Image (cartoon, rainbow over all chains, first blue to last red; front, side):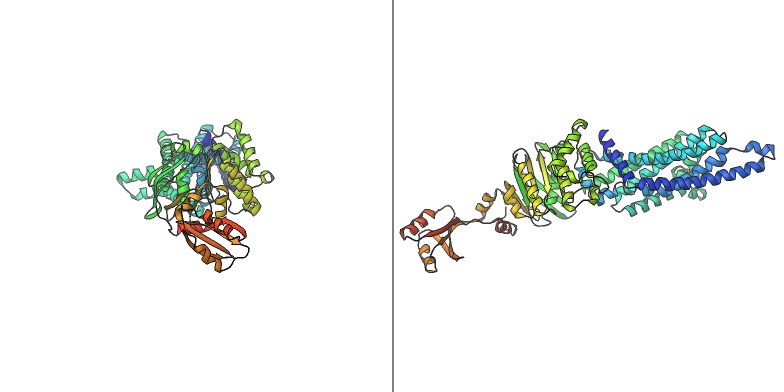
Length: 255
Length: 308
């Protein structure tokens, strides 16, 4: 545990001293702020129009009209940014040969991977928590439901965590950070749109593709639906990513 | 302390280390010599647990490198060929990180870091980012990280590379000061370093052991002759004949207005030669044993002067 913490601490420090984290967080917040602003603006004009008709006015729901689309927007930003946050995690160690220090220290490969993974989760957590300021704004001026927002955030976090597990896996494969980022991005996008193929596929394949795709599981959570299937999906994705990372590192050393 | 037995390492089809065996006694400093791509780094990487061997056994302080890697890693300090440094960290925070992953308890960590900074003379750069310090300092940070957990065994891959002459002497002194309490294996291309710091050497070429032992032992096994160099006040060509006539002397050659006199190893002729000189009242100016210097020795061994 202490070893994991040592690696994690060092990794967080690197994120922040090398300014990667600051830049990523700032850009992320600017984009999220922009999307939030346009959604609120749209919601405002809609509510003005609907105010004339009491029946439609009943249908107005800030959770569905602002937060659900906002979470989808954030998920796309994460899809673009997470490969850049994870690309150096293991690639750089290989490139600058510091892996020789890590693997000759009394610390296991699992501890190294977990330490690095937790550090990347920390950055994700900071990013998401800072967007929380936006929802405080809606609570001051409106009355959204809390539970769907929290579940939506949980969904974002779990999906981001799964993205990062994919990212750390690809960064273990190569010492080139660009290659690692491109592979991660490609894989994430593919998993994202896999359910599109589900439309044309029939029978069991449709279910399989839908299950494997990120999108379906995330969509439920943005609507405030908490389903254990989705949780299991994300957690098994994370486990698989980390497990494959471990296998890659071990097999490289035995080659 | 360090025992290597029939070690073999293959990278695919490439045989990097072949059937290598040697032992290093506790408290000794041994040099690992060989041309580039001889398998020095691979051998060191296997000993430190970075690479697994294809075949063979290696143990450090009684712990098997393959069976109990963590026990070995705890008592071993390692300076790889490419010094492993994080450019974005300061010297101090880097050493602190190394202290943590080398399992130094938190209470002693601060003291260990300070000691490492002091022994490697890093006080002046402790707060600077590693990417901004000079090559020599980087090398010293590398040495500091190898020493930080006070390891019983040190593996140093070219420890003095990139240092200026004063620093080289400093580092050599540091390594020498470890003698007795710690066991050290170092690889180097500077042969003078070996004569100055090492108790013995292992010479390998193309992954095979060419020779191992103390320098004297290796020299003895390489030469079937031994001899002396003699200089007289009024030497000359004609005296070559004289020395040649002493029974048992095999070969006399003129060199730098002196004589190299050689005889078969083990049949010491020094008494006979001095008596011969004294009887003729020649005045002797210089007399010293003909030692093979380390460069000759190295070249002879590497070029296959002796195969094991």
